[in-house]
Amino acid sequence: MKKTRMFTFAGRVLSNLFQKPATTNYPFQPVEYPERMRGHVVIKIEDCISCGLCVRQCPSQAIQVDKKAGTWKINRFDCVQCGNCVNVCPKKCLTMEKGYTEPDSQKTCEIFTRPKQEETKPTSGGKPAMDPEKCVYCTLCAKKCPQNALKVDRKEKIWELNKEACIQCGICMSVCPKHAIEMKE
Amino acid sequence: MAKRSIVPFGPQHPVLPEPVHLDLVLEDETVVGAIPSIGYIHRGLEKLVEKRDFKQYVYIAERVCGICSCGHGMGYCESVEKVMGIEVPRRAEYLRTIWMEMSRVHSHLLWLGLLADAMGFESLFMESWRLREKILDMFDQTAGGRIILSVNCVGGVLKDMDGGMLQGVLHAIEDLEKEMKPVIDTFLEDYTVQSRLKGTGVLSRENAIAMGAVGPTLRASGEAYDVRMLGYAAYNDLSVEPIIESDGDCYARCEVRLREILQSFALIREAIQKIPEGPIAVPVKGNPKGEYFMRIEQPRGEAIYYVKGNGTKYLDRFRLRTPTTSNIPPMVEMLKGCQLADVPLLILTIDPCVSCTER
Image (cartoon, rainbow over the protein chains, first blue to last red):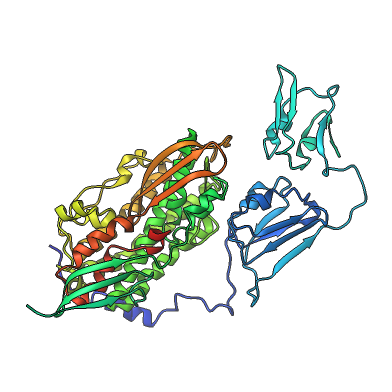
């Protein structure tokens, strides 16, 4: 049988009268966000290759990518800050930063445009093609492919590309130790 | 015989965090029957499984409910993993368990606050929610979100907790346990609380089983039933014992939840002590084909997850039976014979989550 007492909480109530408030005086006292906080998505647009993987993986369909115009568009009001786009980005140009975005009276989109670059060796814009003379079938490209679009068999000497799954990110080309892969139109 | 009258209760009521409607049949001040009706916040989240990749759907499953978010994500992931035959790394299972137990503490503290508020004990309500804030801060530090954790993924977890972080959790729990002491004492020993809770809304063990009660509502009626005993995630390595009370009244339901908070602290400590090193996720290849039923113990009770895959990246069906769905018939049973003034308190003691129920 539990005992019954009166004014059990009175001590705590009285001490509360002489203590600092449990809440902080926001916004005059700024908030310290922890390191891992998922506040909003930030893009390093120079590194983006418009592969569209973030668009396909976004559960709330907040992202739009225009490959031709080189734009990356996000509706901050649809974004649920799950961080899925950051996890799937093959170029790691998306990050979750601390802090929330400003409130607004209208649901606006934020658009980022990739700066025009001088034509160098294309890292994207084409599907990978393998040079059979250089390839040693090490399978590194298949392991690193974010879409699992490559199938490599060392014994049978098979290198196959699933063209539909390929997002032309160029990771296979960059990881190839023998420089056997080229991105061709 | 007194004249019967019907009083509508809800869907908007100060004590209800979410909308549920009850037609209370009264004889004078005594409730003789209650007819519940739901359907005010149906969102069609189960249907969405046909439109979203099964890996993406984790984020939607988590959003079924704000309070049991971590558990819903975990339940969905575990059922998909079982369909695909994926063996999750042990460390990931431990991490899931730690986050899940922290969610239980957070959910129960939220409920205790609401209960105190329903009794008009404002200072106790604020104290409970002040303590809950510490758990939310821990979530923010370890997972990156205060309510929606988004740590579960098919194949494991997305974030690891290093040694320093686990020690931080231990320290925070230690502080919290000390601060919980006066709150627990007040809930269990205070005259005001006892006079409101003791003897109200008695649900006998037979009735609880017959009506399909789950979670703390069932355990407060004396039935030792806790799905964690099945040993999913890391629970098979931890010492889980169902916490039971025999009275079956509002006070017993409150006591079960208070003791479960302390049990969760012990489980987190044990899990942190035993957590193995290793990877936190395995790569997932292919698509799910087949079906699976998964049961997990959410803070509110047993939740059932059913997934059916057809070999494509879109699942055929996802079904979720939440604890509140099972607890509504026992609640109607409890209401019979109570006073009208006790109705808000009684509804609250099953910890209703209508958003979960309607999905």
